[in-house]
Each structure stands twice: as structure tokens, then as C-alpha cells.
Figure 1 (cartoon, rainbow, N blue to C red):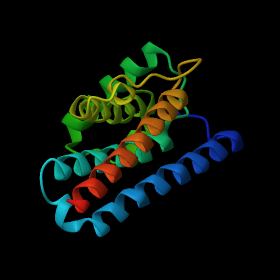
Figure 2 (cartoon, one colour):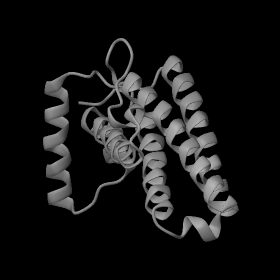
Figure 3 (cartoon, rainbow, N blue to C red):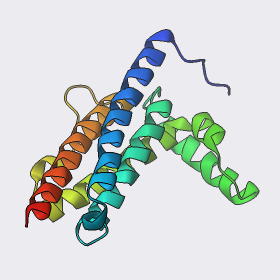
Figure 4 (tube, rainbow, N blue to C red):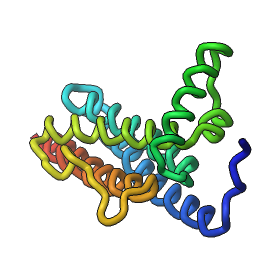
Length: 166
């Protein structure tokens, strides 16, 4: 069954969220440039790489976040995603989009898992258990993960600034 085309309301949300994500991604890239020597050493290297994964996951999830949010749709799309992967040995963005009930959740959960790992590493409860406020939807989960992403990039920046002063 073909999915409905994106509404103007969703496109506005999508463009604004991608913009927010890109701004934080640019801040992260700036850390790579400004702290090149430090960011190549543990623990900064691992944390920076995890944050690139969060940036990508949220960037991709923003495109996919117009979902119905029901479990049956997620399960059906998960099955079809796996079938496509096994049968064709390929998955592209168009497949993510077609099967977005599952793929949106996958990318958001991937971001949340990395943020949780970073939260344990930094002993920061704000990152350990990212939860949306209000109604739970792909968009609210995305927003909660993005807010944690901002916190994590800022934390890495502080960590690098402190290490540079030593």
C-alpha cells in the first residue's frame, strides 16, 4: 500500500528539525577541526564517533518521522524490511521511506542507545534514559533524542576544552 505524500505541516516540521540537527552536527564537526589532536585519543575519539552516529540517525529519522505509530504497522514494516534485505541484498533510502513505520523507530532507537552509552560514560542521567514529553510519537521521540544530542555535544566540547587547557 502506498504511503500518503507528506503534508506541508510535516514538511515544515522536517525542514526545521533537519536544520536543528545540522546546526548541532556542524558544532560537532567544528570540534573535530578545533581539537584534532585530542579528538584522536580515548575517550574523546569514541565519544565523538558515537555522536556522529547520533547525528546521522537523527538526520535520517527526521525524514521518516511521519508515521502512524501503531505496533501492527511497525511489525509489518519490520518483516517487509527484513524480507527486502534478505531477498535483494540491498536497502536504500527509498526502502527506509517505504517501510518507515519500522525504520523511523530503528534510527531513533539507535540514537537513544548511543546517547545512553554516553550517559553511562559521563554519569549523566539526562542521556541515560531519553524520554519524550507528552504524547509518544516518532516526532516526540525524535525531539527528545535531539535535545539529548545537544547536551552530549556540549558535554564533549567542555571535555575537550578542559583537556586542551592541561
